[in-house]
Image (cartoon, rainbow, N blue to C red; front, side, top):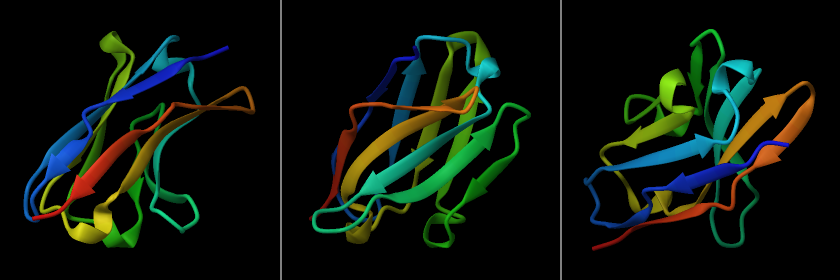
Length: 115
């Protein structure tokens, strides 16, 4: 069993920045992949960014050039640096991990982009 705990959400003005963190209860090096998803009110959950145990990263087109996913194996933590935030980035952001074909989810952290 793996627990994931997100933090770092909040209210920010358009154009601002936030950094989300996700701490795992197990070594992230053992994860096949770790991802950030988000879900806005009335919308389906969507994949935002992911990083493999080998360090390869990917992003949904809408955040490319603005968001950066990274990992710190020593801290069992992944991050999502979000810059140039837009109102449409408002959502609950969830950390996800897959290990040995089992999916784990965090509880989510709210990000609100508004003036």
